Length: 106
Image (cartoon, rainbow, N blue to C red; front, top):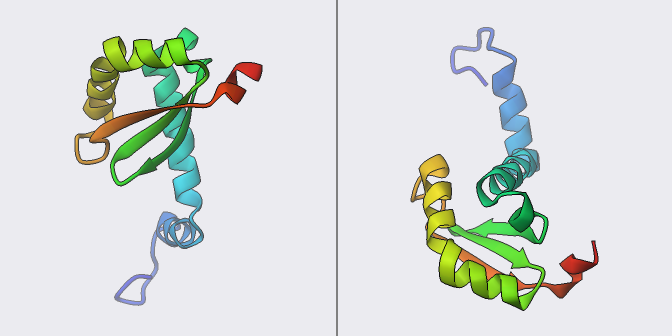
């Protein structure tokens, strides 16, 4: 709310409401998923899923062990660097890969 009690731009109370309800995080999560798909490329993105961003660690689920090994060994640093260039090192400091074989069912 405006400190002077005068009129304020409509975006301010809407942003406050979204923050209170946690809805801005949902929108941020969706944007992060879209960025992941663009950075990782369609082949990797189709076999992975952003699980969450917690304490600057992006948790990504991977559909199978061979892809997880390939990502961890050959692509993790480049993916992390690309994410940090877009979001900053304080926002995403690490990338954690976990296996979720149920992703391969999609």
